[in-house]
Length: 78
Image (cartoon, rainbow, N blue to C red; front, top):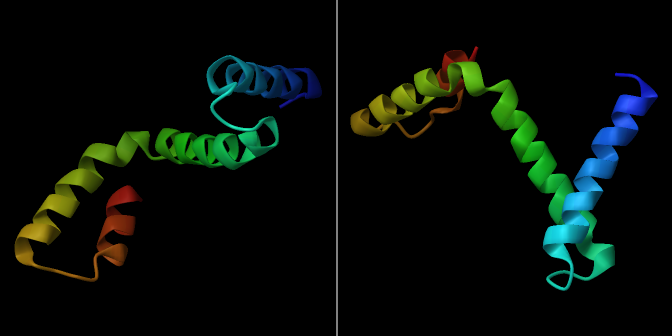
C-alpha cells in the first residue's frame, strides 16, 4: 500500500469519526472506539470466505456439548 492510499484511508476513517462520533465521545477518545472497530472489521474481512463453515462448525460443537472449541473453529477457518 502506497503512502497516498494509506493517507486516504486514514482521512476517511477520521472523517467518519468527526461526522458520526462528534459530541458522543470526547475527541481524544475517538481512538478508543475507532481502533477496535477497525480491527474487528479487518478480522471480519479476512475470515469472510470461511464464515459459513465456522458458523456451521460452531453450531455442531455447541449441539455436541463440546466446551473447548478453539482448535476445531480455527481448523474450520483455515
